[in-house]
Amino acid sequence: MARKDLLDIASLHREEIEFLLDQSTSFKKLFTRSVKKIPALEGKSVLMLFYEASTRTHSSFEVAAKRLSAEVTNFNVDHSSITKGESVRETIETLQAMRTDYIVVRHSHSGLPGMIARQTTAAVINAGDGAHEHPTQALLDAFTIKEKFPDPRGKKVLIIGDILHSRVARSTSTLLQKLGVEVAYLGPGSLVPKYVPASIPRFTDYEVAMAWGPDVVYLLRVQMERQDVQFFPSVREYHRVYGITNTRLAEISDRGIYIMHPGPVNRGVELCDAVMDYERSLITNQVENGISVRMAVLDWLTPGGDFPKQESYVAPQRASSTVIMP
Image (cartoon, rainbow, N blue to C red; front, side, top):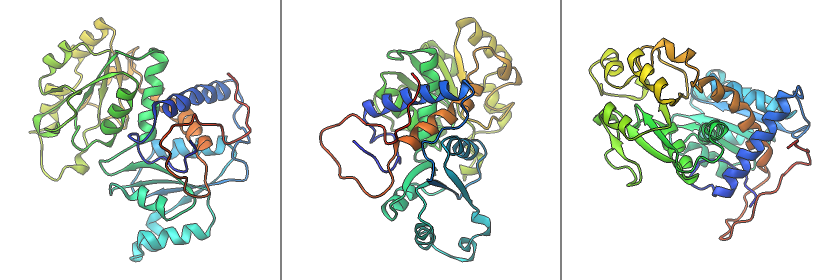
């Protein structure tokens, strides 16, 4: 089934996820073999519409688009008419007049990328909306895990930290479960939602959570900017109770557990400095894999209008004629 937009993970079929992960593998092989640019999106334009500050996601999408030969325009919100009171709808009408083909949008309000998608014929990619979704982060997380576990079914991923405010936790746990991965949450009781799917164990004690037997520990950034009240006494206390300390890292190393983090890392909060040199840390892999995953997403989506919902699933076909090496 052709798709115009990528707004969330929940609406993706498993076959679509597998297709995107396979294409990500192909794109990664391509640019690691010194083929840095291909003409898949030649003549197309990608607009970066970021209402929230971002370094990793923004730069990753920009590099991905340029490697596909697309033209990239960065919309500077700080210097736009938005600061003069222009509504998002008026902004989109202006952008629509520019005939852009893809819009990559990040916003602090949940659901806004979907609203934009309904008002434009451009393909819209949600690069993070509030505490709602971050679909390409989930895809790159799954891709990173599959590089270590080609068949991830039955593997266990423990997500630690600020689950309540995390769009990453929501998207990544949804996608991993679609792939047959077991997911559990660990964090302060105030930061782990009381109502989570029954299939996701909810822990508040580190030792009990580790006894669950994770293959991957996924640390979330403590998002102070999204917390309107203080959910724990101090960052030092958080690190002691829920962070990966030097002692805990030694235990994790003995058990051969992988460590992931979406970045940016708060050293001394979620993890100690030694984690960055840990041989089973996949944090750098996640950054690198973000480019190939976002190349796959851009190449897959089809701008130009809405596509009707279909009850039966049809395996996706490549929109471009680019030949990807196996």
